[in-house]
Image 1 (tube, one colour):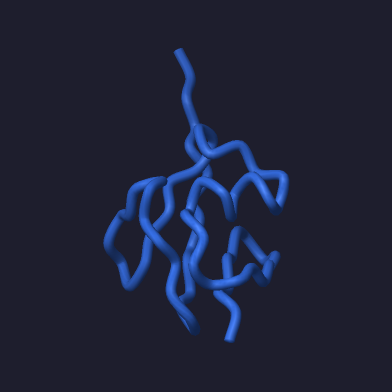
Image 2 (cartoon, rainbow, N blue to C red):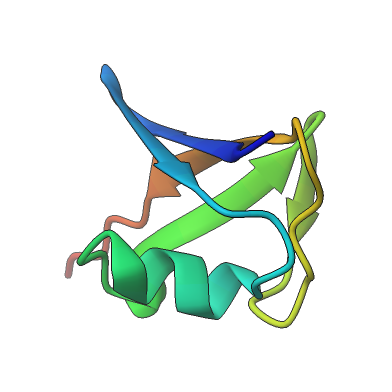
Length: 64
């Protein structure tokens, strides 16, 4: 089963076994522009994604 990555109202499916970094690159998302959470906990870019996980991405907003 694939991993689901969600940001805003968009959903992407990626294969399990890849790192979060690789998954973000695969869906053309800049890893520096989002925070990733799984079950409400922030995960790092080197996290290996497992089957049936749902990863929620949160836009990083910066300003001055």
